[in-house]
Amino acid sequence: MSTVVLLALTGLGLAALYFLIASGLSLVFGLAGVLNFAHGLFLSVGAYAAWTVSESWGAIPAILLGVAVAATTGALVELVLIRPLYTRHTEQVLVTVGLSLAGVALLQSVWGADARVFPRPAWASSVVNIAGAQVPADRFLLIGAAVLVLLGLLAFLRFTRYGLVIRAGVENRDMVSALGIDVRNAFTLVFAIGGALAGLAGILAGMYFSSISPGQGASLLIFAFIVVVIGGLGSVTGAFAAAVAVGLLQQFVNYYGTAGAGDVSVVALLAAVLLLRPAGLAGKAAPA
Amino acid sequence: MILKINNLSVRLGGSHILQGVAFDVAETGVTALLGRNGVGKTTTLRAVLGEVPATGEVLFDGRPALGRATHRLVRDGLGYVPEDRCVFAGLTVAENLRLAVRVPSPDFDLVFDLFPELRKRAGQRAGTLSGGQQQMVAIARVLLNPNRLLLVDEPTKGLAPAVVTAVAAVLERIAARVPILLVEQNLAVVRRLATDAVVLEAGRTAWRGRAADLLSDADATRSLLGVGTTAGRH
Image (cartoon, rainbow over all chains, first blue to last red; front, side):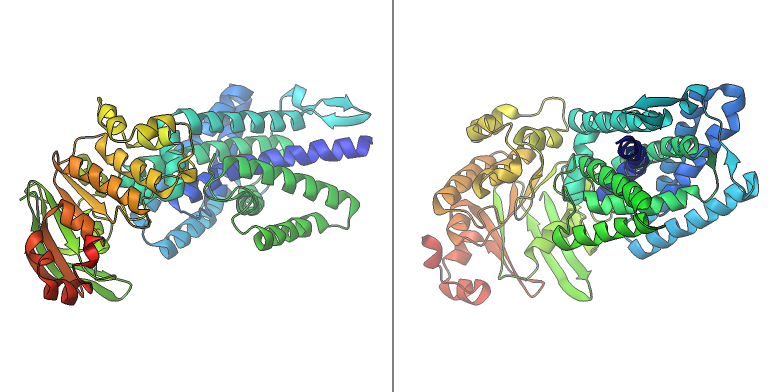
């Protein structure tokens, strides 16, 4: 029983990371139609920014800085690199792939290729006894952050003007323009939101894995893409459900199966969803 | 003239869809844009609106329109009711209307006067509405804001006869306030609403003049539109 509880909470912690990355990725693809392979860079930039100042500034200011730097990076990438290429999808993909590779190289040149130990608050290193399982407290931080982000995103999408524009734009962005709305501002906003959430995910991943490395964003991004596809493009709640499914499946199969079976099972889940429900769990028409 | 189109040309996916379309839209009344399926009527509207790349000359309210962003043209008073309604299915009726508002005092009185049913269905998802109700939402969205010209694309397509009549009556009331460039296949609706008519054929302007003159010429309607005028009287 204690093993199941530990695996479940660890899987949910992993799911929280996937959701934080995938929610922004999903909104970016759903609204702007951009398959952003550079999304992992936002994660790494946020993590390294927070790591750089964490010793001197303390945890909370470091997290805020990391999120702000990642959000700014997201907005700048949209404004400078993506905006001129909205009608040129091949070039768009090439630019984001190139940026992700160049970003990793840039991070390596500044901070080195080796992983860096990520400082974590003392309470995050403690353990909590639940049904006999000794659960690291950072799992609850991850899960709590993901739930708060989910609720915040849903409130933003439901109750704000920009949220309304984004929900409509995910369905039909040409029609949003035909109502007199400059949908490009919403594109920049979702890149900034996606960057901020990826930056937060990068910082929390640093706490979860106790380290950060230049390639960490790219490796997490693969599973985030799977979560986006399973959840349904543009759907925040779909991404949340898919992240939970992927995180739990991966954790349990990795423990009870052979080495690497968890990753294979996630790909099998993706294939099953694509066959049975090609639009994903939520589909594109239900963005919230 | 509120809209002047000259030598409008559009190429899409290797096809030369529009090959020098030219016509004007008067400051008042309804100008019907007619023609068989696939001659470029919808493409003409989308080119005017900046949704497809085009060459030639389009003057909207005296200012060049080609090359300007769609949202800027709309903000300058170019309202668009697209083919197949294009309501946001996942949004409620109220959200569809709220999204369209871009002035401090939107004309909800007019909208609910024309479409009282929308008030009752404010909380309903637009995707669950009937075709006629979705058309109400699509038309209501443009009426919330002041317009200099409305582009209305096949507003009666796929609707039941009683709903077609109701939509035509609404357009008639709207036309008293703002000029309309109307793409329409139903000649009975054209006969009721249009003062002027333009007929496209193979991406070119084949005929333009008074709508009544076109519709009273059985040979012209048969050769240009592929229908007899008696069919349009039903």
